[in-house]
Amino acid sequence: MGSLVAPVGEDGKLQTNSTSGDSLKSKSKKNNSTVDSDMFLSLLVAEMQNQDPLEPTSNTEWVSQYATFTQVEKMGEMAESIDLLRANDLVGKEVIMKVTSESTGDVTYARGTVDFITVENGKPIIWIDDKQYSMADLDTVVSGSYSSAYDKYDTLTAMLKGLPDIKYADKSYENVIKGAYELYNTFNDYEKNFMKTYGAKELALLEQWKEKLKDKGVDFSDVEAKEDEAGVSLDDIMKSFNTKMDAIIDRLKLLTGDTDTDNTDKDDTDKDDADKE
Image 1 (tube, rainbow, N blue to C red):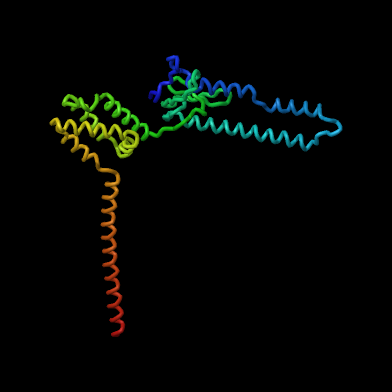
Image 2: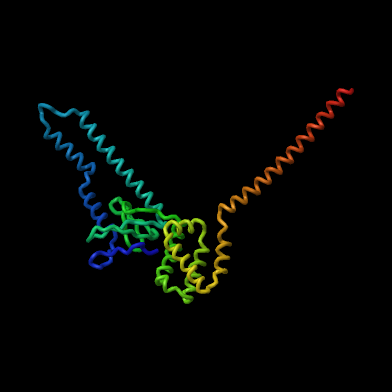
């Protein structure tokens, strides 16, 4: 799936190396300056050799320094392992990544499905549409519902953006407006709420066009009938279900009450018979 915003620099050239161009370079520099255990031990030995003989450092302090360094090193390794697990879990999922221009530093966003993961210097690299990103560039993991809603929102808004000013409305735009309404009628509740949230202006414009074309004699009864049919919401379904369940429960209570009454009458009769004897 294509990016939300094409990463183009001020020079007009496409930024093909995405945010990784900056972030991965900076990570590489950090890796070159990382102090590993061998370097730490070398520094520790040098410190021991050059310490003040009149005030030598105790063995306990040397051990404490090394233990602290080892703990920090293990925590870093654990963080890298967690990043690898997170990255592997992203394969096949749709994500939104930050994209930083190397020339301007401007931040845009790229959207797509994670193809595979590679590891460089212990760091996971995310590949999307032949472009690489670091885990630090991950902005959002997109759900299937969001992806579907966004695609339909994008299609509907594109249809409306192709329209001229509403003052030029005439019957020649009948198919476009009806097509937009038919598309909207295919939206589920989540997608309609998404459209109302992010495309409120577009929906208002669509309604204006419909009313304008109605004034010019265009019949929207077929589209409106489908709209009413599709307008049965999940809340309506749940209310209907709850009403039916309440009726069933009331009926069960009634039957249970009748049974209890019968049992009570039977017990009273047995008691009277016993008294007579």
